[in-house]
Image (cartoon, rainbow, N blue to C red; front, side, top):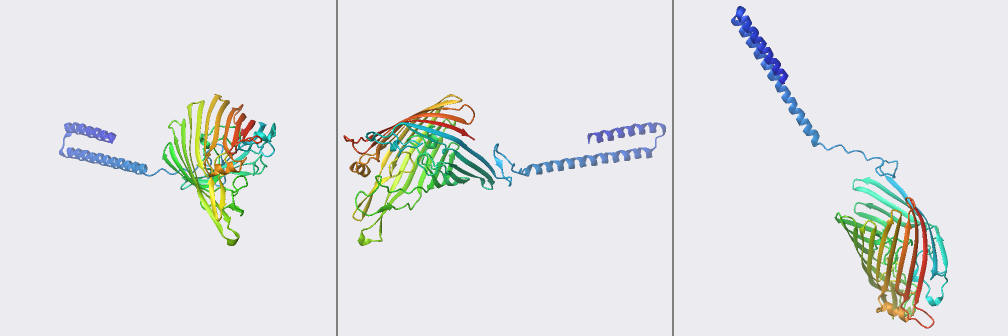
Length: 475
């Protein structure tokens, strides 16, 4: 536009000077009029071009504003957004295979026999010292190896995730039978989870590392089928609530048979799922974690009535419950402390090394449940000596209430299987020579004490001493 104006002015000036020169040679009124008309025409052309340029500028600005207001086109989901994950044929579903190849070996110097020897800690079942149990027992297994698959697929409600994980321990209570045992099998979408996984009532996040496959006394790793809801409170706090199925409390001959009466009894079966909950609080720097746990479930028994009332059943129910708190804190990058405490009544599902949940009795046509009640605690400390070497020391204990129906039954029957107190002391070290390989060694000392009193012939305590070795490759 500036160039056009300059051109017009130059032409106007030239014409004006020309007109003056012509006037000197032969000035006429008609020539002056023609020049004025040409100048006016040029000025109109300049104004027209200027107006067109302004209109074009306004149009370009409007188009830019419209383009900016439109949302950017959504980029298609990448065929693989996670390193190491496999993308399936639909281009959306991704999966990751993981697991561990593991071999365990244990050597019991005290407290083992053919009935209780296992690759896992058996402090609660060791023979009483007066039984002169077999010593120097060797156990080995590779059944603790694991195999798992993680799956994720985007949906309009967020990522749908799933996990399937199993080991080879099967149903064996000793060294595993080589068949698959499901550990985790669940789907998760948004805040909801359905399937089998670790219960919110147990405290795997605040437990120290152990060579023993199960873990330390004073905690648990119970994995139940559940429907779970997770509600974030803040960036560092959340609440988990779950309804869980699980093992029915069984009436066995080891302390839970009827104390009186002659009719056959059996577990009545649970009518309602267990209710469990957990509240997590993490520090902003992620050095500390505090978890508060809760649990409620029903204990139920039934028995046939007397012969005159054959065909009828008698039911008795009582509430089992538990509360707990666990925490850990890393006060340096290499030093972490752990602590856990639980109080539980009428349950034997969730914690390690528990007695039966209750004893049952019958007087006439009336059934009674005498629930066990106990406290458990654990303290632990872990230190990293170097990037490849770390150690842990931990102590755990369980102590049962000594003045209730359950304890009185155990004392009256002089039961050698119902324990009043148990404790463990664990010291271990792990060495990782290369990435994903762990070599572990662990020493465990433990003791159990029964409700029955010591006699001249029968002790009421059993001592336990074990060395464990482990080699594991994680992939």
